[in-house]
Length: 597
Image (cartoon, rainbow, N blue to C red; front, side, top):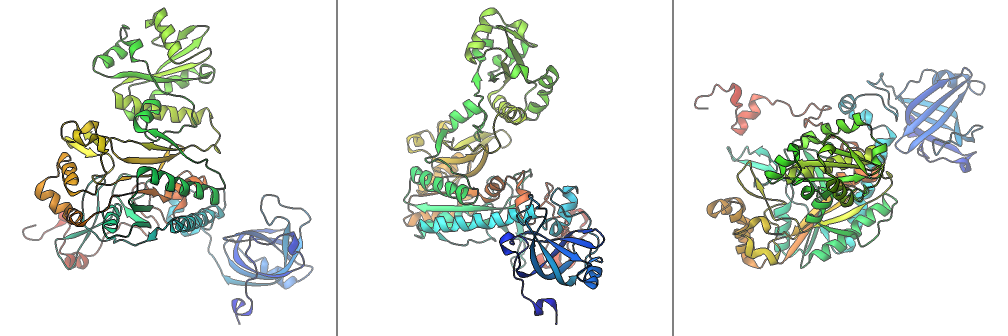
């Protein structure tokens, strides 16, 4: 009879406390650490709930002690024993007040030496840990993140169900309607030469569910985008997808603010004050340089172009002459916090965003020092100090560039220095709705207007008359919600009128037959009484990342990809054999010898 047939596990390895002293218990888990002190062998036994110390005493049972001496890290074992209070508590773990005196041991499965030591402060590279992700997931930190993710999903389902939303699954194999990131394509074996696309989001399906009269829909759904990756991106990701009929933006703000507050309170143990602040897109760009502002950083951007207009300094003069701006922010007492070498090094922070460098001015007893200070007259200095409300030893940082470059560079600089100088506490929480986005933005690459969000976003009714003659001035009924400078969700009120949708397609250069070919099913649905509707999609991975205090969404996904979109554990993507390609009617062009290919 095996150990599992003989005994049932009574407790997890994170459950026992001093009040359990004297109880007979059965524990099963992995050997995390073995410490041999001669007559006593101590084992840290680990499962997903925590660690319990198990003691094997040679004086009590020599054979049992001998068996324990052969244990190695990551052996799977079962232990029966009695709980005792520890003489010396381990305050670092919840079970640190007790230990289990072993009376029976069974090795359920042995383990070879692992490629890296499984410990909380792991030393192995991320690449090695991703290759052996099933081992890395044994770390309690990672298991806590996945448990937190599970709890967050439960809270979402409970909250939305309570508001009358129903969860509906939408297809993974669907039509390619390129608009935004690249689609992942799936070839059809039955319809050779044709392809499905994996959905970048269920956008069109959720709108069709509104046309179907479902009224309120949600889904915790996998989405796919073939785009360049970074810390907060994955080729496959999870979003909380939400859509409702007969609602306004204010309805969305109220309901979804409640969802965010519920998540942070029930999962993160933090209260969010309601209602959540709102900030227009224009104000966000003007004040913070980005539509994802982190307002924990106190520095507000200000435009100093007028001060530098007539100064004989070529760096600013050439920029202003070409329609650019001089803009920046002031760091209180920053002049005493950053060395000249550090200030000169700030150029490397802004270069990736297109800026050539950072102009800096230290204020000391009413005088400014810095590379460009000698070009400033007494009135210029007075105006600059007044604009930024500066006083010694403050530091003024400026960027001279076109509007887009200046704002993006200053946003990056503000974020970098905010963290570097520790101007906020990591426990601080800033949540804000960003509203009134432009409906369109100009793409130099494509030489046309593209949607800032997506082509189904409704224009503000006040701006519809500008659609064809001044598209850049049209505001969208769109909104994002941002937590600590990270966008966690975005959405809009949708277009539900066929003719208005066709007009928006026209501005985007999607006209006539092309519109019918790509989106005909949606336009057709609008013929039959489409309700006014709108919604939002939250980045579930990003939310869990913030709740867990993780640095990357890879830390809160069970089996993530690398920044090269590879799964190192299963070696994907990988080549497939010729037979599979033949069944699909495909060949690899680089080595194809087939006639006519």
